[in-house]
Amino acid sequence: MSKGELGIVEKGKNDLQTEADRSAQQCIVSSLSLQFPSIKIIGEEDQSSNSCPTPPEWLVTESDPNVLGLQCPKDLENVKEEEVIVWVDPLDGTSEYTQGLLDHVTVLIGVAVGEKAVGGVIHQPYYEYQNFAKPELSPGRTIWGISGIGTGGFDPKVAEEGKRIITTTRSHSNALVQAALDAIQPDDVLRVGGAGHKVMLLMEGKAHAYVFASAGCKKWDTCAPEAILSAAGGHLTDMLGRPYQYHASVQHLNASGVLATARKEDHAWYASRVPDSVREKLSS
Ligand SMILES: Nc1ncnc2c1ncn2[C@@H]1O[C@H](COP(=O)(O)O)[C@@H](O)[C@H]1OP(=O)(O)O
Ligand SMILES: [Mg+2]
Ligand SMILES: [Mg+2]
Ligand SMILES: [Mg+2]
Image (tube, rainbow, N blue to C red; front, side):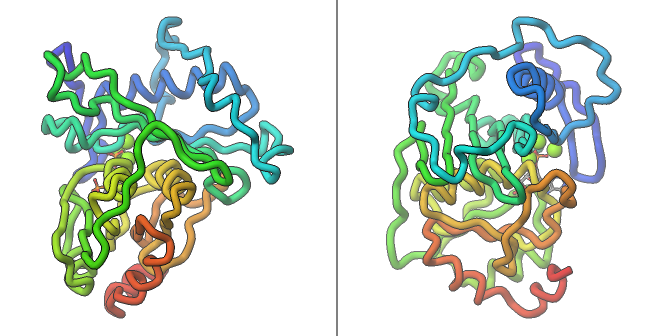
């Protein structure tokens, strides 16, 4: 961004990649494989044509002492390194990034054991960037969550009761997405970019539910958000209320959309509102 040249590549219809996506993935994957050589890492971007070695100054070698000081939950105590799958979305909200909507951008690192998302990080590189002379001077902030422990890095808030504020896509909408929204009869709809950003809106009390009745986002979009939201008392599934799986051989596409609520107890109501016509299209 500071070079004034984003290095945009069109991967498909309505699907862009920039130099920031490529560099962030290289930084994250190289750093994680150095510290944890036996974990399986699945990233959004294809790195096979990249022959440049990772610059040593990109390699993160330290760990967060506060997180390391926490008590590991019993059910995760005996997990072996080779059982861990890490889903990496180096830049979520690329479409919005290319349009200068920098606060929609997040970096997502989700940790799965077996088929379950058990932990994750949502980093907001441009958090409150308007308060700084240049966007890249913003220190950003890092939010984490671990199943059985909770969350950190932000102040969780609960949205106003008795209202239905829904967040959804701003760049990947279609008739199905709209039909599901209409059925909920929302008080307000927040159309913003990124799966990470939308789940942050839930955890900050700005929206009650995230509703996306379409295929399009992938396991690296939902693994970290799901783990953190769930550690915060929320719930994320497909539009039919079925959980997604995160093992290494799972299909990457979230073919049945995304339905997430800030409070787990509200989830069944939203799932019950999904019209049959939408259900049929997304049930495969
Ligand atoms: N049709 C699509 N093609 C490619 N990526 C998609 C599509 N729909 C959603 N995504 C990914 O899911 C994220 C959330 O979707 P949306 O912003 O539309 O709500 C997007 O930022 C994008 O992630 P990414 O930016 O990492 O490629
Ligand atoms: Mg992408
Ligand atoms: Mg993404
Ligand atoms: Mg991405």
